[in-house]
Each structure stands twice: as structure tokens, then as C-alpha cells.
Image 1 (cartoon, one colour):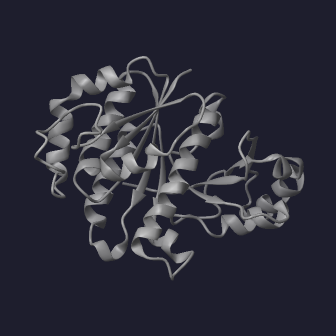
Image 2 (image 1 turned 45 degrees about the vertical axis):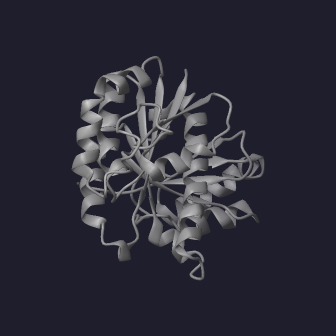
Image 3 (image 1 turned 90 degrees about the vertical axis):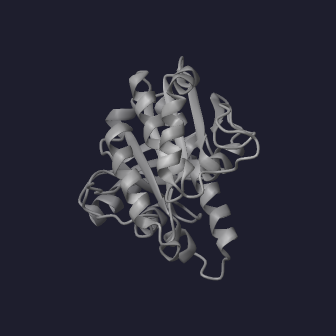
Length: 266
């Protein structure tokens, strides 16, 4: 089953640009010359933070978007929310992907509080929840909290790396029984930093990249060989912490990533 990762807007394009994984094709939808669908004259850059312009452009080129996603069984949409292009276009892209009968997952980065764009981002996220099969949310404020000395640019770069790795792992899991593993609508992620898995997986669960309720839903652990060999001890520790047995899936990638359900309600 073919997988397409689409970078939507400037932030989404930055995320998917670095993907070089077998089985994942990459495309860009933006208002610049890199876009696979030319949308605006060359002398016009961006939507100036107006998501209604981004939405209108996507609607104007809905037929081209349909052509882009045609033939793919899986479509993963990457976007930063709160601006103009990705915020406006991502929901329509998810809608068109679902209409093409593709499994559709959105990986989004929510803006930092000081940017003052939460309301716009929340509206787009609520719409994405209605169209995408699953949504993975990464909050930039929580990425920044991991290293308070980081500059804004360093926070964005770190978030891009996390989102990029998230897309690669989702693409891997999509080859299997995806919906029976990801039983909730929205997730966030966190990664292990080495050490004993039965200690570090619960620690990772305590440091998600979006607000969570530990007793809500089933965590999905995309485990490297070390964590997978310790899966019984890991399951016991996670169940003791949350009251819910996790789903542990062996990964072909280095390191372990934990997907944590988010009780998001539009």
C-alpha cells in the first residue's frame, strides 16, 4: 500500500523535506515555487497569516489535490497550525484524501502561546478532527519546555525532527492493522532517551508533547528491539501507571516512540 507524506504550508513542507524512508513518497502544497501544485504568481509569497486565503486556494485547486492523492492507500499530512497556508489548506487536504478512500493521518504542530494564534489553530484542528482518520498533535510550548534555553528557531527545528520521525513510524504501522492499534482519534508522542525500558516508558508517558489524561485510552509503543524484548515488564509498568494495557508494536527503526491518546473534544 503506497504512502504519501504531504507537507502543507511552510511548516509542513519543512517537516517532510527531510524524509528519506523507503515506501514514503513526498509532496508539497504551498504558495512558493517548491509546491507541486503551482497556486499563485511567483511574486506573491504566503497567505499573510490569513487562513481563509489558504482555504480558498485549496478549494480552487481541489481537482489538482485529488490528482495528487490518487493511487495512494495512505496519506499523511504535515502542517503547522496558526498561520495562513497550512491552517487553511490542511483540513481540505484531509477531506479530499478521505474522499479518495485513503487512510488519512494529520501530524500537526500547535503554536506557542506567545504567538497569540491558538484560537485559529484550534479551529483548524477541530476541522481536521472531522476529516482525518487520526490526528497526532505536537505542542511547541512543550517541546520548548524540554530545553528552556533553546531559541525559537531551535524549538521549531526540534519539533520538525519529532514530527518527521512520527510520520516515518506511522507509515510503518500503516502497513499493518492500523485502526485496531490506534483506537482513539487523537494522539501525541514522546520518545525514550535510553536506559531501562520498564523505567523509561512510564517516564516518557509523564512527558507527552500535548495535554493528556494518563487514564484515557491505550498508549501505543512503537518499540525498538531492546524495548520489545522487555515488553512484558513494560506492559506491567504502564498498566500500573494508567490502568490500561498498552499496545506494543515492534519497529524496524532505531529508538522507541510512544503514542499517547489525547482526549481532544472540538
